Image 1 (cartoon, one colour):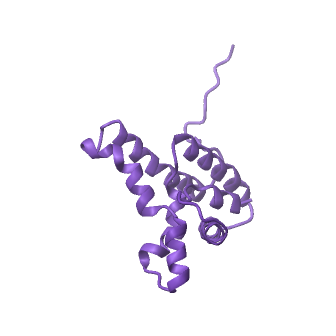
Image 2: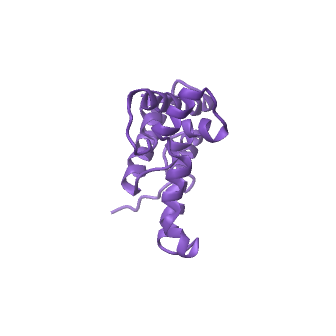
Length: 154
């Protein structure tokens, strides 16, 4: 049986563009930090609380939106939540599905859009998802995860 020699220069992501791989990696990075903290590799005893801190600091809460909507005042802490929530996930499975969706949809979208446009569509979709969430819901739990951005690529 002949030995097949794999192409040593082939990307592990096939023909998925670097901009899409970078976006997927950026989605996965916080989860790697959360897992390392939970395992005790970083952050000492406080590492277990990294995810809770990130949810509180970067999640999109309806109460924050309502305050902005009523007062018309929005500082950077309020505005950045329109996109930062997309990079904090509820757990490992949540982020894995987000990454797979971004890699799959991003590959198809990259056939039509330039790399900067893929990132723009993703971030604008996150902001639109947060706006709809803020207008429609009144739940106490935060909006988290990259699904709105990934679905925006569809």
